[in-house]
Length: 361
Image (tube, rainbow, N blue to C red; front, side, top):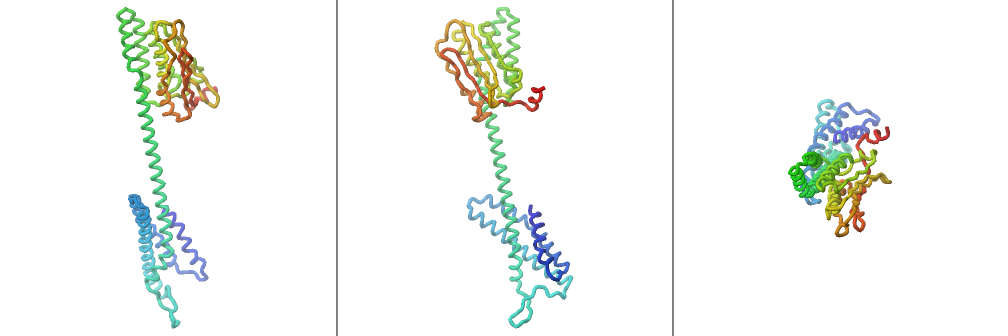
């Protein structure tokens, strides 16, 4: 960046000489190029000053430090300019008069050193001020990007922590009840049913533990996990609980948050099987809606004796899952009636890359 500034400044500095009626000697052009090179080599001072200013809390002191750095590099560059010009003139063209002023008596006199220094400083300090401004802006932009990156990483870590916490909030009694049911089946010599239940429990736990590394999965995986859970509960209640899962094949590749349905299905089972003597159907359905949204519903339909009171779905887990992934673009609501449990989540329809092409084949 600093090299580009000095590369553009050099032709500008040479323009008056190029347009002069009489061409200047070659060493004059070479001096301008060397002064520009010296200015570029002084850029690290500006970079160091810009970095030091970031550690100063007072804005006035920061500005003072930057101005002092610009003045310093400007003076150094101007001093090099004056010394170089004299050295080149004496070496390559000692007869050249150099910069001369006409005195009061009409005689040509050499200007004092301080004048030559200030003359060079006038135009060089503006170049260094521009370089300092670009360096500071670049540093500020880099810090902003780094803060945004750190913020994004922190939000991602917090989101993953929330997802892990929510996943671990699954009913702690489920595993105990399942193992207890398997033990009862073995004791009553219902070994085939016990083996099936062990297999379904294995499927469910595999899905649960595997989901810890994923934020979202396909609907096929999500429905497989909740299907394994409902199958386990069906065996635990000796078939009085039946599960219906309805999802169009075109939606099975849709991406949803992991373990979104399981807490809802668990609540449906808990409500529907109180008391646990009546047949119950837990129905899970997935339908597409307008505006590229999908609706996932969990409902119960029971026969016989009604439950003690109206269902009261606890939707905080589902809301946390949806908010962690979609923000305000998704929602979950209670769709229960007077006796039957119901909850529905509405979220954006998204598919893995390439799924649209395969769906249209």
